[in-house]
Amino acid sequence: MTAHAELLQARLQLNRPDGFALDVNLQLPGRGVSVLFGPSGCGKTSCLRAIAGLLRTPGGRVSLGADVWQDDAARAWVPPHLRRVGYVFQEASLFEHLSVAGNLDYARKRAPAGAAQVALADAIALLGIERLMERRPATLSGGERQRVAIARALAAQPRLLLLDEPLAALDAARKAELLPYLEGLVQRLDLPVVYVSHSIEEVARLAQHLVLMDAGRVRASGPAAEVMAATDGPLAEADLAGALVDGTVVGHDPHDGITEVAFAGGRLLITPAHTPAVGTRVRLRIPARDVSLSLTAPSHSSILNVVPVTVTALAPAGPGQTTVALEASGVRLLARVTQRSVRALGLAPGLAVFAQVKGVAIAR
Image: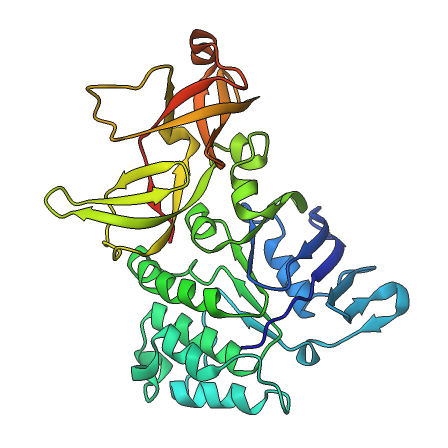
């Protein structure tokens, strides 16, 4: 798989008769997964459709690296079929009369001559669809259909992969089935992926770059860990802020079902649904609302995880609430506490405190 370092840029404006207005200026990395996150109706899918060329926004400009796909000021327009974009919708639109192999072959034959950005055999293996090749779409589960739809999009050797809420139509069990395959795949792809979601769990698991959207506007954009841990951003306002912490599994206690994860700021004990092997790199999500603070090291407490931290910033977070930014040996954590607690503890930048972490989940 060949690496791309090309910036994806999209300047899009759209005014619909129903009063909705889209006005965004996206600048997304040329590698990795960029997630467009926000409530339904905020313009995420419109952005994807405009990037793919399925929607033309007046006065817009879309480019990937040096290739300009739309520039209305210069009267430039590249039709969708020439953009080499793989697009996966919420519902897998497979050819029902063809087998899985036939669907993939159809897309492969339409790849440009000499294009070899994605090793299809690797994608098939990572998506776990080898045993499905002779089956027809009608015999597949929802999760299996979406895995095949992603493989078909990759079979056409795209330069860009767009995923429009690919898990939205699935029940919880099928989402849990598909996410590990999707995660393994996007970590291996060297082409840019733009993923639309309104699930904070999917963001925590997949995003490397995060764009927060609301009412047709970009509220925040940047590396996922930074955007999620911002004390004054939209996620903090919505009580969705939290830290993404990278760590390594260092041990297990099978008797208590506890896994120990080491990170730069210390060690955390978690109870994962599936036990990763010792040495596995994991990403942990720690919501701000699951962190409390103490001036002294707590004892005789049911909370297992206590991390020494330093307060770095405080920001209002709604009526009576404050979001507190914390630093643990270079790792940023957040806590959501009451304003009364801020006063009682004398919380201020530079103060050394103990973070009691009540909830830790493996994002990936």
